[in-house]
Structures are given as structure tokens and as C-alpha cells.
Amino acid sequence: MSSTSQKHKDFVAEPMGEKPVGALAGIGDALGGRLEEKGFDKAYVVLGQFLVLKKDEELFRDWLKDTCRANVKQQGDCYGCLKEWCDAFL
Image (cartoon, rainbow, N blue to C red; front, top):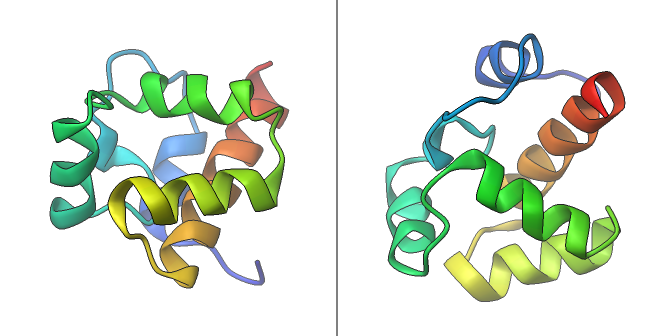
């Protein structure tokens, strides 16, 4: 990822707390709504799935595509955001 969005920078700058799923880079209103419908209403719930998948990029991207129909860019943005957050806080 050559550049990151302001949303990404804001997310990785601080602990996750109770941030909504839509706070994740790559997750807008439509994808956020689909994730919420499936029980992934907070960023930390998506982080849990990311960790269950052992931070594996391919598995996480496939899960996002299957769960909320995220496109390749959205998958990459969300993966990069969670990976950088984990590198900083775990």
C-alpha cells in the first residue's frame, strides 16, 4: 500500500475501543451495513475475525469478499488498516 487514507491514519493512531465497523479503512456505509447484519458491528469484532484467520491476508480478503462483497481495493484497505493497527498495539 503506497498511500493511506485519512480514515486509515485516524484508525491506526489510537486504541480501537468501541469504534464502529465503519471506522475501518475500506469499510463504508454499504459494507458496514452488510457486516453489521452479520453481527460484525464493531471494529474489534472484525479484528477478532482477522486474528482468528491468523492475520493471513488472502484468508481475510476472501472472508471480506464473502461476508460483505468487498472489492479488491476495499479488501486491501481494510487488511492494511488492521495489520498496521496490530503492529502498533499488539
